[in-house]
Amino acid sequence: MDNETWRVVKLEQRNGFENMALDQAISEDISKGTSPPTIRFYEWEPSAVTIGYFQSLKQEVDVENCLKQGVDIIRRITGGGAVYHDTRGEITYSVIAREGMFPSDLTETYKRIGDWIIDSLDELGIVSQFHPINDIIAYGKKISGNAQTRRNGVMHQHGTILYDVDVEKMFSLLKVDDIKILDKIITSVKDRVTSVQHISQKSKPELADALVHGFTQNKQYEFGTWTPHELERMNELVETKYSTREWNYWR
View 1: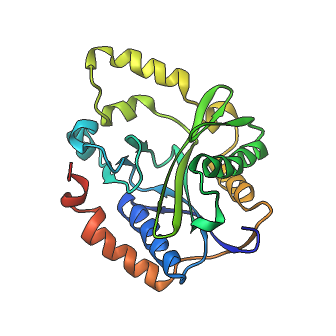
View 2: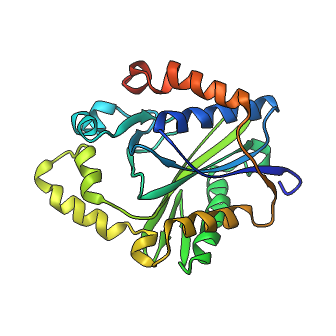
């Protein structure tokens, strides 16, 4: 892995459809050998709810509330549960590279990239640990969740680092099996989840800088941007896939 030169794209804002489409466009071009291994950091503007590939949108998401609050809804290509991505409340990363650059074991890859997150948080004075299979915890509470997929010889992992958490808003957008115990669920989540702002006084730009440092440690890398083909393919995928009812409501 150390012989490869990574492309690193610093924090940028895109809508959820573009974020998912851009990751796919990068993956396709890495598979073809026309794009380098890539680390990117991004925010969601507007805020969005993403659902796992196998989930039922109508069962997991309060579509009416999302529409009222201007929150996008997008199906991911990775598995896992529904996630609320708050514009100001998190930074998301994607690591996309040839499979051969990472262990064949998924948990080992989660741990390797998890170590990059741990190094980043350490720079902010936050002590954290990898919690199998795919979480990072700080002081006993989850601060980062991650998901991974592999196809066509490419490993794609993305995840969130929580800067601030609005649990009440999150549960206004996601469906709960038993509304009568919603207060208990919210309290339980607050007991299990933490954020950079809750632990430290560091700013979001400081978190963004720390993530760049933590993810690039001991690597050859160059700061870069997107190729014309990647952007063209991103726009095509937004229009034909990620913004379509056929993709987002297929189950």
